[in-house]
Length: 335
Ligand code: ATP
Ligand code: LTN
Image (cartoon, rainbow, N blue to C red; front, side):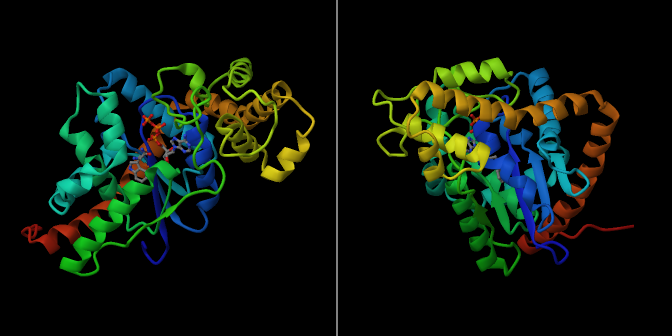
């Protein structure tokens, strides 16, 4: 809760080009929430360096991501869109919360286990405490809800545990956040290995649809999507490839699963894959056009970066000062 209005926080890492999974699982759901909540959408660049990054690329990707938030429909006048690294309260609160988080809790995080396997040569302390920084992000803004894909559920649970622990010692300092996970599109799978989630850091470019892919590439990737051999368009646990394509089609068109099964009852996989590809092309076209237009307007994007960082700093510092006081840090002397 902030100034009497419910608040919301979410973020994405600038670790690669956004995929259809990021869009359908998270970004697409964000757009409708601006009237109900005071919204903060962050480009979480501090989180990004838990994996080694090329500095010039990170800077470019972070700016592209921020631009893409707007291109996807977030109004920057109503939603606070900013870089995590421009608000130092994130790091400061993360340090304090580190002292209220147990090693055993962090050891259970599946994202840490997955990323440690993937980056065995760089299992750094930041990767381990990643969820604490995420808790700081959320708690700084007294967030009531956090819209994310289902892979982030565990991080939300640890955030709640940390907040409850802190509150039980110091009184009601933090709002306890709830996850907000969309019904369809919460977990879009890889087109090449449908048992794995579609991920922007996947090495195989055919596994993911990127938001900036051109129409031919999108259609080609769907045509190559791994399915099964029974040629029946049916939503079933045993058919992960087809189930994923049905989820994507449903999320892109708004049609329900029974409607889709009926629509394609007498079609083969080839026709269905083409229909999914075309639906995704139409879904992404307006976003791509808007992104191209916004990218040219440097002054406009800069003004958003500046104004929104000021706003985020204001609210974040309010919570941080309260926390610092509660844990016993000395008061600042104002002249
Ligand atoms: P990385 O591959 O670098 O770990 P990622 O693609 O998993 O990145 P994140 O930046 O970690 O993306 O996640 C951004 C948001 O997108 C989160 O809310 C996350 O839950 C959501 N998300 C990521 N992948 C998927 C997916 N395959 N399906 C649905 N939502 C997803
Ligand atoms: N860990 C998240 C990104 C993230 C986030 C957040 C999401 C960082 N801080 C706060 C919601 C709220 C991910 O998607 N991998």
